[in-house]
Structures are given as structure tokens and as C-alpha cells.
Length: 260
Image (cartoon, rainbow, N blue to C red; front, side, top):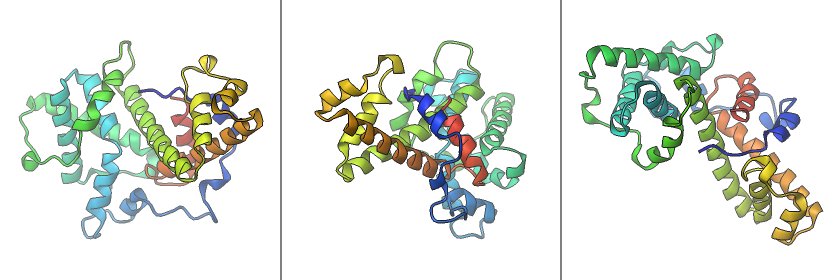
């Protein structure tokens, strides 16, 4: 599902990297990904767990890539998704990734292409993992049908990136909604929901209509909206850091999420 966010606002406000990217200093925070880069083998006690968590972040784009590029059924695509990640784990493919050569998403798409080529050659005869499935696909696959089966000539690579961006943004929005409600600022969430998350911008409500709907002044609506947007940028930044190996990549990934 694509989220109809008003990207013009973020493009303008994010012309320079947000100052909250590294709260309280310049050190890149320790994340699943940075731990994996430091510990490239099973000798690290948390390596396997962190690697599996990283791969969980990418299963939806992989599933959609398989559906889009091979035309597999839902069940076959789920099986291939599991098999691909089991191969990544078994062959320790992540240890072959060099951050200086490009984004991890690009590396993963290349590995996925090679995997699918091999699967086609062997007609899917290879069996891995003894039937073990560590990615809980069932509950989340159906909403992906919109992207996987969308008409048009969008490439599997473009669909992969769109699924990745939508997933990061949707997770950040869920986090934001919970945070604002916990802060007793549900009005800020509602303002963002009505103004930025509505259908295409031309169809959304204006400040006056939102103020009337929420029984608040236009000034309060603008303040609420600015606060919610700031918190959304922070939530997105936290999410993106789970995908990147270097702080320099964060701003570019944020821009890409909001442009797909």
C-alpha cells in the first residue's frame, strides 16, 4: 500500500540533513547492521540473531521481487523467499558485502538475481533448511499483492525499492502514532493523518477544515502538524539507521523513501 504523503514539505525541510540525526554527538549509533559489519563470523555471540533481524527487514521487498520477476504464485514465492534468506545465512553472503561499493539493497538485489537464476537452472530441486521457516510471512503477504501484481512495466528492482520504502515509512508511522498517543498529543497525529496522510494532496483538507473537524484553532493545527512532522523525521531516521552501515547514507536513504 502506498502512503500519500505530501513529499513537497519533506523535500523543502530536508534540503540539509536534520540535526537530530546524531543526538548529542557525532558517533554513529550501534545498530544491528553496524554490529554485523564488526562481527563477520559466528564467533560473535549475537551475530546470528542480529543478521536474522536485519534480513527480516528485507523479506517483503524480496518476496515482491520474486513475484514480479518470475510470476510465481503466492505460496511458491513465500517458499523461495525463505530459501533465499536461508542461503544468505548458510553461505554467509553478508560477509561479502563491502559498504564502500554501494548500498546493501543493491548488493541484496544482485544476490537475489543470482539465486533466482540458480533456481531456474535447477528447476527448484534444491531443498534447504530442512523445512525450517524463520520469517513469519503469512500474516503480512496479502497486503503486498497491490505492488506485486500491479499493472504496468515497473521492473522487479523498482518494485523492490518501493516495497522497502513503503515498509520503512509504514513502520515509522505506526511508531509515531503510538508515541503521540502516549504523549497525549493525539491531535497532532490526527492533524498529520488528515493533512499529510490523506489521498493525493489536492484532495486533502486545508487548515481551516481540519481545525473545524478537530475543534481546534488553525494556529493549533499548524503547531500540531509541525510537531508531528518533526517526530516523524526522527522516527524515520531511527528506522533507516537499521539499514545502513554509515551515517553518511542516512540522508540519502530518507530522501529516497520520500520520493518513491
